[in-house]
Image (cartoon, rainbow, N blue to C red; front, side, top):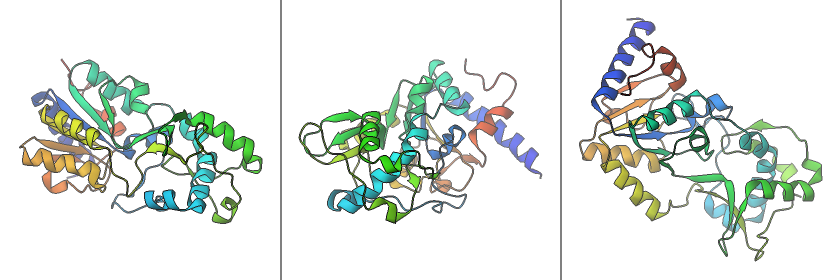
Amino acid sequence: MNNETDLTSDLARLEDFLARHHRLFVLTGAGISTGSGIPDYRDANGDWKHHQPIQYRDFLNCHATRQRYWARSLIGWPWFGHAEPNVCHVALAAWERAGRIAHLVTQNVDRLHQRAGSRSVTDLHGRLDQVVCLDCSHQVSRWHVQDWLLQHNPSLAGRAAQPAPDGDAEFDEASCLAVAVPACPRCGGILKPNVVFYGESIPRQRVDATIAALHDADALLVIGSSLMVYSGFRFCRLAAEADIPLAAINSGRTRADDLLEFKIQARFEDVLEQLSPGGVSLA
């Protein structure tokens, strides 16, 4: 069977899945934002493609780690902050408006679903456009922090580097050693992007609300995620335990492959292009 025949069969299964389930819980990952110029984390086998992410404990306890983070972020934030929603984000917003998505949970921190018009969205891992003080909880805009970083680190202005998935950039360690690190403008405390770092717990209230949304849905559709991180995989496991049907659209393997009703091994934008004329019926 050739790839074209495989995709035709997969699309038929997807259309049938969507026809049978009208209250989708959609879980998206980095693969949905690659069309917006934001790199993904893993290859088709689920292995890391970039530098290992900074651990929460290291960010808290090590000034040099914070220097490394903010140096990379200074260079990478402008392209990340200016990224635009792509056809995938727009399509899911349309599905929500048509009443076919009960809730969307994204592992991404780019806010592109909201910018495309989706309203019922949980940013499972937080949002990179906000920065929060770990001492007094004061929040500031990431663009405000960018202005501070450029003012206090003029030698890095205009530096080019390879973009990385977390809104930072691949950058040599030696160049980070003299970087000035921003502090809270209110109390002088440690500033951290308002995202969940590796080794940091997702707020319990956020997890509980997401689980409640899952149990209010009639199916789970994973798009663009390998689910290698437990925070996303847990919802697939809970869905399977509750006999909620699962399907996935992802260009590589996923941690939940054994739980899925089916998987389309392709990019979501390619699937959208091949749907029946007018797309999947959302009536």
